[in-house]
Length: 228
Image (cartoon, rainbow, N blue to C red; front, side, top):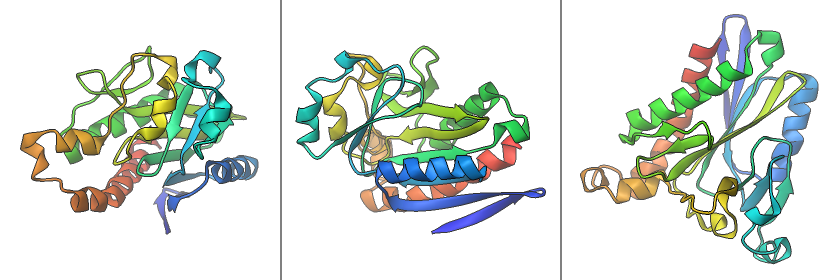
């Protein structure tokens, strides 16, 4: 399913996919960069561990061949950062933006993504998150990571983006030290809601599932309206 949102004379396509293989996304990203086609993709992936350009071998808890035996792909990509995991149930957001044409700084783009994500999660789920500059991502007050951030920028065009642990089971993270930190704990929005007595009755599984599309729509609207 897809729709487009217009901003002045420009059009940013918004694609809402179900689960797509990460390798397919990489092919799409390369095509969009080559053609300078701006859009935002919302999706999730089959279990995959992606390794950024700062990845260390010791960030894997077990040998890579043993991880692959669990039907988990491992892909080395050119985004920043160390290891992270993707799996079904996340909200993965890939903004493909021509920052060269639009004369948008990398810092402005990253700060914009962080702020609208943090603000929308609080507005929709009453979950307060904060950004850690030394460990890029959004965290709970207890230091649990909910949102991972890793942009790739080549030739003034962006790919990769953010992964929100929304209703995924977090099992893929068991094979790595996320971002290279041995004591970092991952959590999800669904878990936080279920463990909060004040919110549990308001967000059952059906509501959480239905709110996913609405969250993506609001995110894209906020992103386009306030960045350009």
